[in-house]
Length: 359
Image (cartoon, rainbow, N blue to C red; front, side):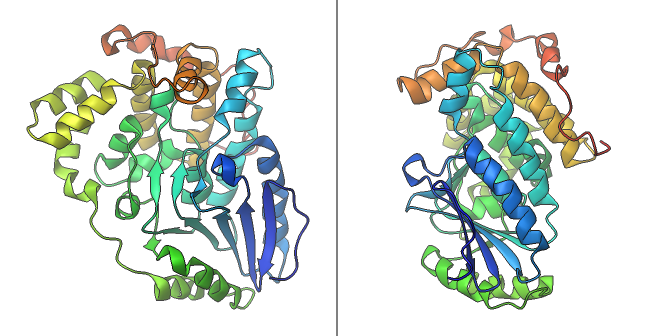
């Protein structure tokens, strides 16, 4: 390792040859992102982009458990409960990072080893080269805490084959390496034990290396990802998740024989009814959107309204604070969430994040 840059305790910036390394360093918190980490990441990305000696940027997570379990939901919960007006600031700072990664001028390589959830997917799946391993466990679990898929996932998930993205967004189910590749959220599978070797190989590239050179390095280490559950169940998923109402999706699952449909229906039934309906609307609008910016703005508007409502705080309480896994959603039934009740989640009460971008 050489050329160590200024760093904080929670996010480290290193160099291995021509590869600039971003290391998320909160292993006890599964490298969950907080505001300080997001603040540090923005100037580092700018610095690496402008540094003629940097050939590529590599994102990785410290510890043995995963890349990143998402944003620091506990901190957002505490600010919201206290009525702090800064409660939405994390998302306002985080979402532009997702956009920056999606349009990064140099190869951005995300090592999606172990747990990758929520905000962790956002700083990985928008990159140019997304690497999964046999240990990858990816999910967008937001409907289980009264929230919705964000960080640009309403842009990416609708681009998955058929209704695979709708399945992932509504159920929040954890999927493995082959599923992540099938859904278009990753590009290649590399054995976990060979990731350090991959990074060293990327470090040997010449600054200004062609995209094909980075791709060739990744392909050298690539192995088959194995069987994809999403691919195996694609026909059933497409039949059941093509509807524009969650009630119709649940009814379609009830008509399907077999354990997969039954288990999927049970999973959805435990999620926040409001979050489910809001997520489906966001995914459908994302499918018809023209840009990532449009989706990020829409997600932020929905997130700000969610902070004014009951289910997010109840979902975080049940999952993270009290850990009783028994949230009391309000409304508690899908049929009690009217479509007109969702309209307020799409009415912005805040300045736009991307004022310099045309939607």
